[in-house]
Structure formats: structure tokens, C-alpha cells
Image (cartoon, rainbow, N blue to C red; front, side, top):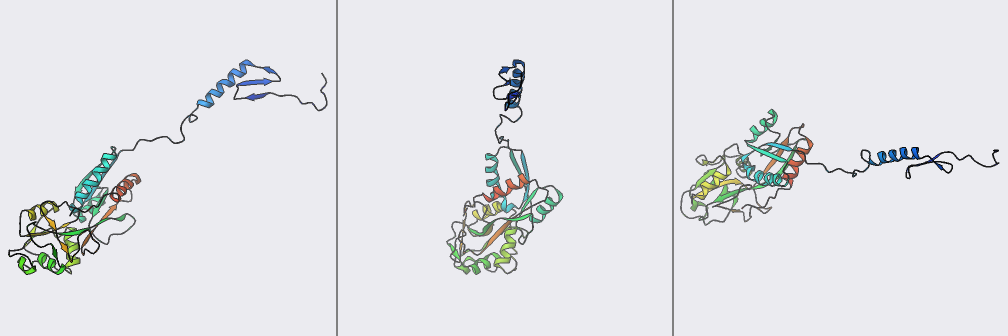
Length: 283
């Protein structure tokens, strides 16, 4: 049959939606069945029916943190709460002095360190939090607000009787942290001009044990960081300022230090936990 001018040959057309092969107006059932199979494969192939973002389970994370004893109560509260909210997260605290904590970080025994040394800086160091240095006394002590020079005299041993600073008659019993503790170093630098603390003071290895000693001694006075819970004692105002007020004179800083090889998810979990940790006054 002669081709009419202007006419076009109708070639094969395919419709994947219908699964049919057309040639003119005639259907090819076998080819249609084959294409129907292809449509099914394309529609149900990998990723075709999957959501754009797959939910992923939290990866197990375990943190070994070497930290000074003064930060212990806050670590317990913060990381225990984080662990309760994230069951795949676990942690362990290695209580050490700042120097030993940094050594543990260097040796690989700890992944991060929380220390109370000032002037630490660098790409793997950040300020974690800042808390007041608390001067605590027995509840029976009638003093509630003491000038800073009087506190310095009491904790340095220069004032040996409470009456010397306006208190009731009785000897002053001083309870102190170890010399290497951050709270001792901070107080010596900020309040005593680097003069020594009382040489005859009783040294307590942890803030909790120091609180317990003062709670049992009506003539006692001690120095602890604002991270510790106070039970059976109370904190003094200094120069008319509560420890929770910006005008309070003495503070201690805690620094987070980590190794550059620390996995990013673990670093992110550590920093976010410390950043969200409630620094509600415990005094």
C-alpha cells in the first residue's frame, strides 16, 4: 500500500503505567506481561518504597571521665540523668587530682578529663562550668555574714577564736581540702594573695567528708566547692553577698579537656550533657 503524503508510520510505543506494548492498535500480550513484571521490579526495587530518612538506633557510647572530686556530685547528677534518657549511653568516673586526670587522658586510661586548673586553653579544651567557693559553718554558729578579710583570717589560722571576728566565744576549728585541690588553690590565689591556709587545719580528702566534719563540730569552719550538697551545715554570706549572687567574691572554674581522637558523637554527648546540667544552688 502506497504511503499517503504527510502520513507517518506509527512505531512501537510503550506505557510503563499500563504495562502494555502497542503496535498500531494491536496489543502484544507477552510483551505486556514482561513489561508489567519490569514495572513491578522498578516499583518495589531497593529504596522505591522506603521513607526519605530511615530511623537509626542510637549507637552505644561509653565514656571514661577522669575528674577532680569537687566535680563528682555534679557529674553524678548530670550523667546519670543523661544515661536514664539514653539507655545506650554509659559512663564511669575516675576520681583524680587535676594533674593525674590529665595524665590519665594522655595515657589513654580516660577519654576526657574534668579539671580545676585555671588558664587551660586550646582546641580540645573548654570551660565546663563555674561555681562559688563556699565557706561553711555549723548551724549553731550565730554568724551569717562575714567580711572577706575576716574569712581569710579564719581559714589562714590568723584568727584562732570566733570572738575575734564577732562570733561567740570558742576556738576556731578549720577543715580544709588538700593543697592540690582546686578549691584550695583558688581560695589561696583569690582571697589570701597566695599566702598559706591554716597549717593546723584538718585536711579532708573529699568535699563530702569535709561537710560531715563541720556538721559534727559547732566550732568548725570549712571550704568546699558549690557543687557539693550541704547537709547539716550552712554557707556564709561574704561581704553581704550570697554565694548565688554575682557579687560573691570567690569562684572556681572546671575545665573539660579531651583527646583530639575522641569520636565526635561521644564529645557531642559529653559537652551537651555538661551544658544542660542544672547548676541550681545547693547552698
